[in-house]
Amino acid sequence: MVVIAGPTASGKTALAIEVAKRIDAEIISADSQQVYRYFDIGMAKPSADELAAVPHHLVNVVEPTEDFSAARFATMADEAIAQIRSRGKRVLVVGGTGLYLRVLLHGVVAAPSRDDELRAKLEAFADEHGNAALHARLAAVDPVTAAKHPVADRLRVIRALEIHELTGKPASEHREAHAFVEDRYPYQLWVLNPEREAVYAAINSRTQKMFDAGLIDEARRNLQWRNTAPMRAVGYVQALAVIDGTMTREQAVIDTAQATRKYAKRQFTWFKKEKGARHVEPHRALEQIVSAAPRPRSRGE
Image (cartoon, rainbow, N blue to C red; front, side):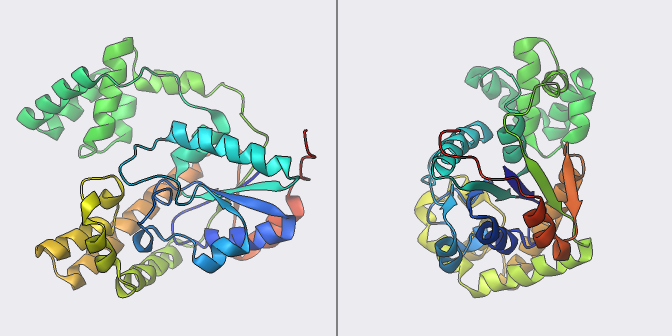
């Protein structure tokens, strides 16, 4: 299996299509936002021509109201991988959602299921005392995980506290134990390593193009899904603010680009630590990936 990862706006989509053509592969998208139907412009999905050029999987596969997780992604990706291999094709996974890639390649960390009653109590604590107090509770029992999550990331802080409450062990200990689990698939992980300033410039340009292409109108058409996960994505939050009259279009473009640059920065950090990653400059990536690609598995193998 060939995997192409990297920060947003680094050219993964165009590269993946060229690689897929050269090695006779089908593409599995590892993007937590592109799975949702009806939200197209702000998710930077492959164009209709790109989708037609090479078979794609896990794009436009769930309704906006559906819950979607890394575990569900891995299950659906497993099914797609089996189908692709049954046709004697190579598998090419491409995306920037690091957690999805990690779960697909290495599996899900063993942890308890969500406890709605406990989560409600933690939410109430945060509402009363603030996110900083909630984060301090996590730091007291799991400083390693607390250092990974900003104070404002209430969802992940609550999940880490939930794991500790239910198991008596910090989430970081669960992750450390999981690090010794065998890989789920043989793979080559290629991480695009462009200059940061080039990525930031591409983000600024792409953001402007999204708004020019009708991002605000798309958000308006999708107002029935206002309180769903895709509408909380960067770009749609700002588009809603324009619709609500709390932000100008110009400020929405600026805010979206800034938030996307921050996301790209986190992606750079994440992929720098990935096990077995081969970091490659974008202009060298095509030939290096194609020349190193493993042979396709035969049918039934």
